[in-house]
Image (cartoon, rainbow, N blue to C red; front, side):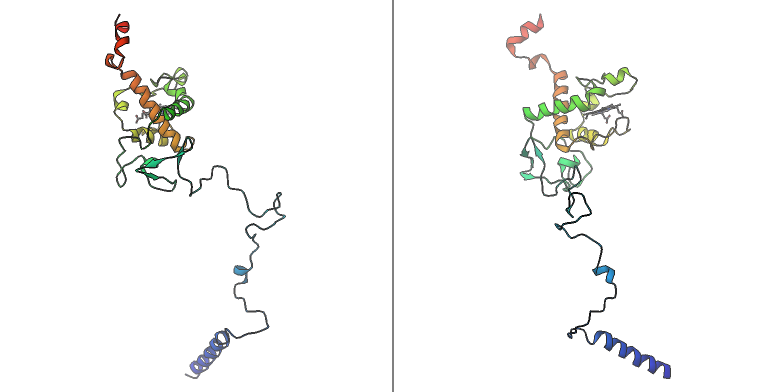
Length: 223
Ligand code: HEC
């Protein structure tokens, strides 16, 4: 019991000694229990530094950094989905190609289809898809001559019947069996929808019937 009293008195003295004088003024340097938390060898933002060659402490953003504050644009125009602009961090059909809250692909592209968009899609398709799927998308691209097998014909019924969302997701993530690789990392979201619209234009071009030909031209074709 004696030791307990002794210990108790010492503890009280230590607590009062350490905490009791907090707030009172002193000319002595303060007690720093973990000084390395306060004093770190770090550079303050926007301050000069001779560590880097350009003499600045702040570094430039890495290439390809996406600003959270910048909405998606197509050809300089902010894309609106349901009247609202879309930001890269959002869970939105524009980037997921799915109906919100489900895993179902959206039926139609959320991007308004314009002649300019289809032109852009053609440009991108001819860079990224043509080597395998061919200029008309029938799967007879140049790589098929060099042994790449099983390239899908984009005019096959199954693919024509796919939703826009599913084609977008095939470009993003590759084919389900991964025989075709993902192109998401190299083709921006905006361009992927442009390619979807061009693939639809290609499909339409192969599905045209006589009724799609202007009447004045029909006679010439029938000959
Ligand atoms: C390296 C060759 C290659 C390139 C480039 C390529 N594809 Fe494919 N694509 C394939 C092959 C092979 C298949 C068949 C994949 C399979 O059956 O799993 C395929 C399948 C597809 C399918 C059907 C997917 C499915 O679910 O069956 C679509 C749609 C498609 N490609 C669109 C595109 C588009 C659009 C591009 C351009 C962005 C593109 N592909 C670029 C080789 C390629």
